[in-house]
Image (cartoon, rainbow, N blue to C red):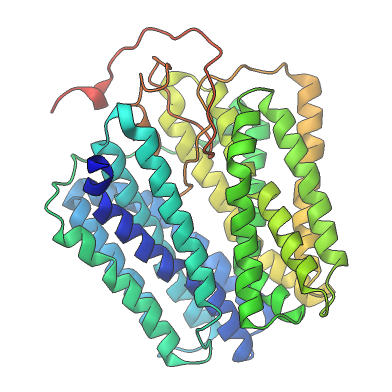
Length: 442
């Protein structure tokens, strides 16, 4: 308990970041629709957000190295607040897309600061528990942010003021804490081609996670509006997917540690196709419960795709490529996330709102077929580390997790790959552990 209390400022800061960032995307979609933006223009804003997100993933480690954690977080909060406040000042889809680049940079930077601070300070013996609480706080912020959509008026100036207020409030816990920030890690290199050669299946899974997740988050509110949901219903629809993702973490994590991870990827991709087809068929304005159920099943199947794919990639990676591998996975996720909101919005314009889940179904179907093909070409590999829930926001995490050599019997300094709360015993004998440059006292 004293350890968790010591991280209370970090937890509270990330909760406030989620309140602001988690509500801004749906708010922009609904506000854009109210102002007469086309579906393609709304999709452009979503793509712009993830373009900024990718820039932030690379900019933040360098910024932390130059000015430290506290100042980097303050800069991120200032940029995020500015991006939200200027929405009512510069109205128009292209102005808003530029502002979404700023908020994307801010969100990725804020998460990188908080996650790197926490992981650098936590001890091996309680790292899993602290990180588990962090994920609960993060997901609670996501759910609360979706609930805010039910009460915020997307056409009002006040709605963006409230979002900006959360961006400013998130500064207080970290700036008022007496805890000293950690030393700063070096930034990883980007080597996507090497990652693709190492595991094509994992890289495709990461791209599909970006394609489907970003499309649902950024364009999903338009689908919900067309399905006849009111603001409360839209909030429930988006929250149902988050709850589905939460519910899937332990069982998927447990299963991914017991069998070939590709078989798990195959199963959740197949069910995701069925869930998407169900959401296309159930678009009935009078049957809201079916929409909520479909969103829940979509979350159960779509959210763990990144987790299982990352875990499988890390299983095959040599120890000296772990950091660069996870940087490459963020790159592949960002590629999918940048493309998908604009592409899915254009499909909705051409074929109607149900095309959103037709797009997601097609992506999962490609992943299903490719995974099945690769399973016939390559033998399975035994897991080298337990499956854990790792956010997609920070490439610094892989380097920091290299400190966690002995917590789970790894003994080889490999990070916890993937994204789940489940665990499992390693199935390979631990290799002798040799301290690397990051682990020497400075």
